[in-house]
Image (cartoon, rainbow, N blue to C red; front, side, top):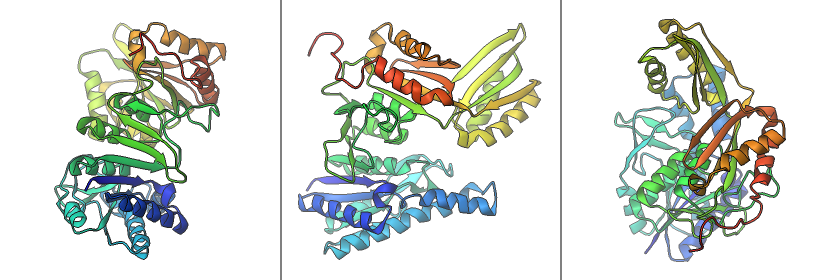
Length: 413
């Protein structure tokens, strides 16, 4: 019997009525002949509420204790979903992340999955039960509970799908699939039938919150096909897989945006070997991800070093960089949070000159200044003023006519 892994996000299980709806969907998959594993997030805004509760105690809760607190959210939802499925007359069991075999590294609040030991899950499936697993959480080699960061339930689901050799991993969320832009910003945004792992990874990393980037990395590594679908109604959704069937030749497949961005500038940094390593290794040791990096030469022996981090990481980033700046003899650290990032993604842009120029033209025509640019083979990102963000997204979407199905680049296959 084939195994199907389904993941349900917080909005999908936000109320008792929605939990009962999820139970009916899980049971329907069982009735189609699947062995079903459902991975569940905390209800609604529970995680945010728990974080706020912790910060009423202390502004800097110890990360280990924060994980102990946050993991309780998923345990509520898995138990309630199991009760709802039991009430429908089906054998079911709920498991925490550790019970489900999710083994992580030691990084609290942002742990990475090292391996999955699915023996318990497999034995429960073979006993005829539907298995409900708490997303977002695991256990480290020291037997401490860890959490996987925002959207971590996606990664739990994909990792289990890989370990169980599941037929597919369905990610149920509050949108109908992956779109060419956020439909809340661009009403003409078009749902994509399918998208490659590489393009989805860039879009997820650049602000498209449909999937956690690590889940896409995991899927690409193990060849797990992800099907992004709405939990509120039936629809075709979007397939995330190795090769895009219909739109694999498009120059640009989507526009993404990210407002969780802060800009940091270390001024008058001594221009000598090892300085950049000293700064960014200190941030890496604290598990802070750095995105855009620009170094500008001011004088012969000093530079300004600009980079971006998430706003969530800004307080700790400033603590670290101010200490390192004093150590290096830099004159200071500046920061700004009134910025945002807009990006275009598409595997076809690597072989098509002029894509960047069209993006910059769209911004110029709307009097939007570019502060920083970063690129890869399949993406171009610009840091701009946050107040111009929605205008920028709409202008770029229109410039590349993403509301239509564009003609393919190159010859037809």
